[in-house]
Image 1 (cartoon, one colour):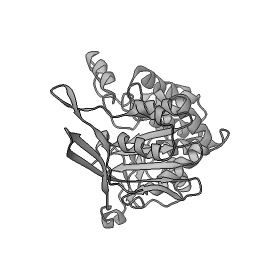
Image 2: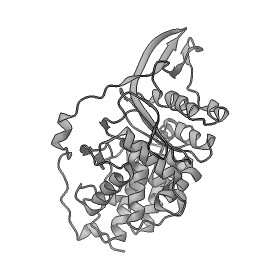
Image 3: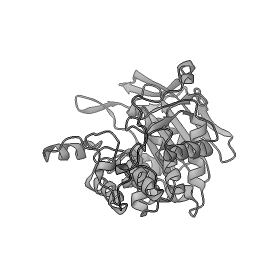
Image 4: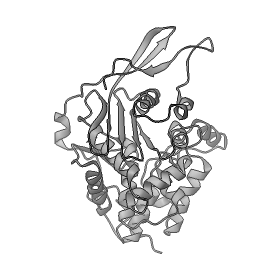
Length: 344
């Protein structure tokens, strides 16, 4: 199979693609969502917004300003994976889960991304994502001990990028320039995200890995995850959700909270995103979207677990997801907890 980028060209942007409208968007009115305590005193507070929607789009729990536009970052990956299936992607379920992943960079993740490329006659030279070390702490340390540096395969989005290049081969689209916002692949991705969220993008930028990034509200993202989680397994949305649930270790990795959450609650769909994003879908069509305003990763899970409890998710299954304690002299002296003043 020939490499399309040898003969086809596509303009490659030299700067991020911003919409002028983004500069006119005001900061959301976030509220306290998570408190950090030390011996009974609230030491720090993480602000943010959230919403949980039922399958009929009615609000079950909300706080802050969930209709404000924000960049969903890597929580868009399952939606992007739906678009890739629309474009003809046909790969084993473990590799489809990797397509929707922000993986830790373990050997199974790196090998999976390489396999997607090889299945379509490609090598890692086709990838246009940024280079990085493995995202997981243990995986990064092992990688560095072996004398390795940043690569595109090790970068946490390599599964998605491998599948994007594969779709270009399948459709005889140029591989070079596949990240350009007007490339037919990215037009399809944009339209699919609009369809699943039920709203047009408020702004467009570029994600850390180089992919076009569309701004949507927490409301729209919760709606999309509810649809994915409740979708029939034979639909494209259902195929993505089923693959992620069946192979949660491919979606994140061992020791990662998203993997642990999907293992703990049968049927639950979960994906995180940089800058404090957590998305969850439940089999009954309920969708939950959380944004921590300061981007603090430690604050995602305490408030997510609290909302899931309010939604009636089995409390015992969530007990294993409690955040590590705040330490003093190596001993527990405090905790991260959902703020007691956020409204429902």
